[in-house]
Length: 138
Image (cartoon, rainbow, N blue to C red; front, side, top):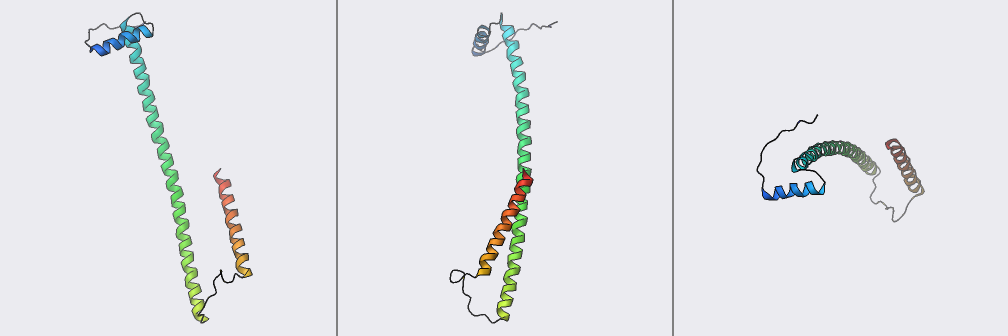
């Protein structure tokens, strides 16, 4: 059973015209039915708006956490690479001093076979690690 409450209300002319147009467009028998329909639509939109806010907030939090995790991994990897590079530079400096090296032929002057081989091994290792990481992520 539909309980109805009768009341008097004053609305602006523009809103009354809107109610009349809504009644005619949607084939309601009176303005009260049109107003009921508008209020139901409003309640539904309010629920949907809340749901969209909740979903967008949740997705934003998940994305933020994932980006933070990935950036942390990059930062740790970069720190590790930097530390290892500094260690290698110190070792190489000490070795060169011990050997009294005065001049170093650079790789654009002469590239040894062992350097070419080492570059290929490192390139291959990095590719394998990337493939392994990519297969874990999927």
